[in-house]
Amino acid sequence: MAWFKRVEKGIVTPTDQKKETPDGLWHKCPECKTVVTMAEHRRHRCVCAPCGHHDRIDAADYFDFLFDDGQFTELDANLTSGDPLRFVDTKEYPKRLVATEHNTGLKDAVRTAHGLSTGQPLVVAAMDFKFIGGSMGSVVGEKIARAIDYARQNRTPFLMISRSGGARMMEAGYSLMQMAKTSAKLALLSEAGVPYVSLLTDPTTGGVTASFAMLGDFNIAEPGALIGFAGPRVIKETIGKDLPKGFQSAEFVLEHGFLDFIVDRRELKQRLADLLGMLQPVVAAAPGQREARRSASKAQ
Image (cartoon, rainbow, N blue to C red; front, top):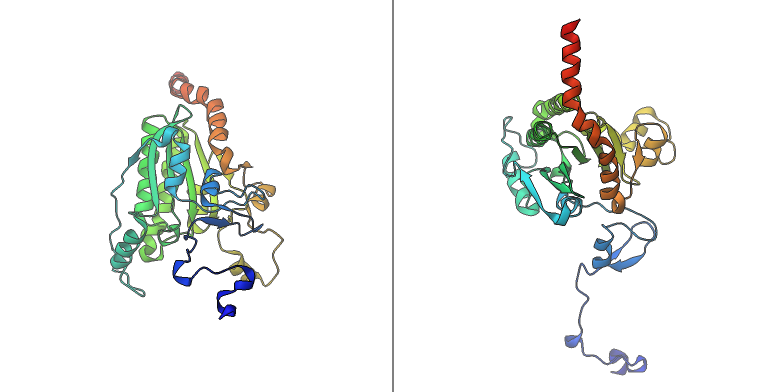
């Protein structure tokens, strides 16, 4: 039975004494195939050190490194969707929501919070793709709208982190209404002179791209993020032509003028601090400027 014990290679460990490598211990980069420990991968914010590939992360991960010491106050944490259309596909919509909440621990596809980031107050809304593809339903729109209201009332800069497949088909027209609602709230934020930074991550598509994701005072993105309205496969089938190399990547969108800059996730917190630090004098002066404009208007 030497062939079974592999004595020639010095391997004599009985099968019942073998130890398997635990799952989740190692990470292999899908781009350059570099293998590192998960601890090392998380230390780099889930960015591959050799090639810079950005893996998707959740809202909780963004909150953890954007807010100082991971300390924040969550807004409207318990909002959940109803079923106004009594929608049924392969399962009833309420059952799908319950199952997704059980599997993800999330109430819906966005979390909103406020806290300090490098000592400056910041309101953050971050989408989670794992909740029904980050789709935008009535709760997503309502939570973002309330977060914008909080930012406007407290004169606090607002950061929107988008990651979505678009509108939620289970809510049909109710979902599409969120495009108008969030856009209107952002108009009020702009009128108040409060900065809005929109961070587009992989993927940002559909009605989210067509509304709040592209309305930032600064539109920025993570490297390699897919950004567009319809997906490249749908566009190719529609126009019947091959698409340019890198079509709808963050780099392609930047080149065509739809983004202000691309930022490595590991540098995001400091880049935001620098950007918002430059804008703080403008935010502080905004109320007085509005009063001056009103007085001038009355005088005329």
